[in-house]
Amino acid sequence: MAMNVRTLCLGILSLRDATGYEIKKMVEEGVFSHFIDASFGSIYPALAQMLKEGLVSVRTETQPGRPERKVYSITERGRAALHEAVNTDPAPDKFKSEFLFQMLFMDRIDPAHLAVIYDAYIEEQEEELRRLEACACDLPDHAGARFVNDFGRVMLTTAIEFLKSRRPEMLRAFADLSASQTQAPPSGEPRRTDAEHTSQPAPVISLKEA
Image (cartoon, rainbow, N blue to C red; front, side):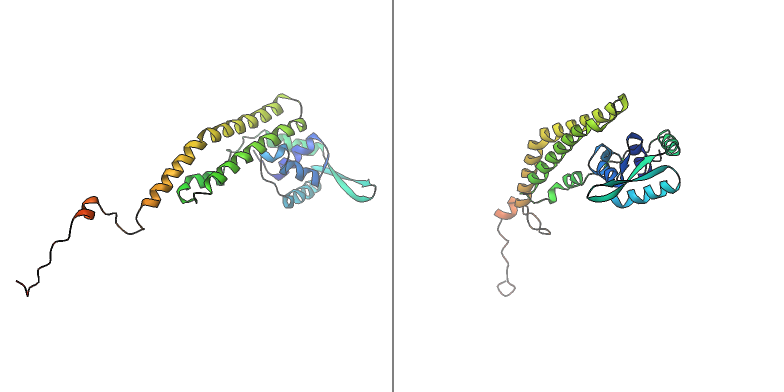
């Protein structure tokens, strides 16, 4: 599917009219934050281009004691473009996580820092779940919207349960790893065996004494 900032803006405007700032808030903090990344610097150029193409319209509204605001609406041409975009095959999902990268190299993390990283990530997922539940009221009332919200809740709830269940094992494994590294000889120095520690060096016979 041609999922980009344009498609995202058209989707939002198909639900209700909105200003560029309102679109930005929905993309960054609302229900539309779960689809693609869209910065403030990309939203306004997309709206300006779609305005030229007749996909959206704009009106100016006055506000007492405040600057005028530009409110965007989707046009019939924009609805047709949205229909075409959502009727194509979606691209594969992309999941990237700096936290998982850190877990991959947990042997390089300072001992006092691992629990901090791990617990902060759990809190982050719990906050995301609360935010998702709060966004449910902004969704349209149909089966597709409920599916999206339920999918997100299941994914986050499962991740939180997994993280909490594996926490003791991860911290224990990290403690064992840290202990083994503490006992290891400096890099480049071979580990001496017990025999090497107990054996005495062979006597050296001088040629003068022979």
